[in-house]
Amino acid sequence: MKLVIIDYGMGNIKSITSAFKYLNVNDITISNKYSEIKSADKLILPGVGSFAKAVEKINKLDLQKILDEIVLENKKPVLGICLGMQLLCNSSEENSSEENSSINGFGYIDAECKRFNIQELKVPHVGFNQVRVNNNSKLYDGFSEENDFYFTHSYRVQSNTSINQSICIYGEEFISSYEVGNIAGTQFHPELSQTNGLKLLKNFLEKF
Amino acid sequence: MLRKRIIFTLIYEDGKFNQSRNFRLQKVGNINWLEKNYKFRDIAFSLDELIVLNASKNGKNIEDFSKVLEKLVKDVFIPVAAGGGIKSLEDAELLFNSGADKLVLNSALYENKVFVEKLIKKYGSQSIIGSIDYKLNCAYINNGLNKINKPLKEYINYIVSLGVGEIYLNSIENDGTGFGYDFGTIKEVAKDITIPLIIAGGAGNASHLQSGLDVHGVNAVATANLFNFIGDGLPSARSGIISNNGNIAQWK
Image: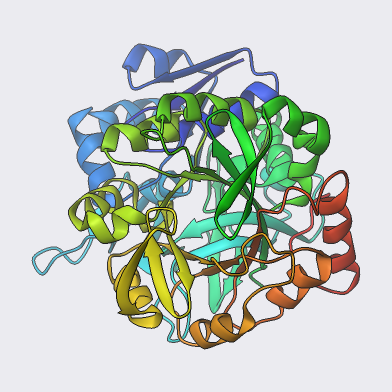
């Protein structure tokens, strides 16, 4: 199994790498090169930090073109984590300006990222929260109805259509993960969610 | 529902982990001692987060600290925050590459605002914990040595305005006593803080942790007490809190 963690200079790659090492993945490559991404069995799109900065780096590395071919056309499985999950969506209002009300992501998932905007709610949303699992999602094979996962984020994904999502509640319902064909994403950090997280990552390795 | 968190704080100084008492450090043991007495990979399953602070005074040797950190967090799949003496973007990167998921800043919050803003811009608010040590309604920086001449609440508001993601509020007077948290100050601060609040200083047993978790506006309780939670202290504190219907995460 060759797993490529897409490196665009942002993300807690160390924690993700150690989780997959623990799950006995023998080839873990951290790269942004076309040839490596093409030869991977599975891809991880990590991400910590700001949306705009991530998009800037992705553009510089021409990653959109590479992933369009490998993820959209060749249907290689990809898991986006936290900011990575948001980047696979249409757009985000994070770092938006007066001229641009939003910044575009990869556009593979029909959803938008918006800031939590409920009064009295502490932002960022930090800590373990219960995810109401989606039984149609392979990520949650073998899980019970509600499970604790670790979140840390200020923006959350919303969609007007079904993106085969799981739901979490923080002041309001928001999308805690999605799974559309070969493309999956989690707002939470499975690599920081103890046994629950390891189990989900194992599902991604084995069932996609 | 968002769970509250139990955090274990380890205080590192020149190769040893320490028990702090009112900010005076007592060396307890090195990483092997910690492994033996805390069986770290097992204990981690009773914690929501780990904070590792570098209190080394001689130039805060960050290379050695990062090596210990890396060893400590191997196969520990919980969020890890590290801090103490972070002075440059290179320091920050070194800690992230050694297994930190977040950074803890303290003196830099007051002394180097531009640097803090740079870190937040690069890593995002959620990656930065603003740590505040206080005594008698005043914050102190540089390991509790220098007093900030502002009321505590005003200083907290200033730290929040910098854009940090969480506040770690540590009572110097209660630190290491094992007598319980400083609820007077905590309740006063917790009622109007707009970002997650972690309290520290004084927890000596499970019921202290529980009372901390019960405070409205407190998001996490931390303990740095190496003596009181030795052996299975942390796992049994956690299971006790869960059986009392405490709102903390459960893993299968």
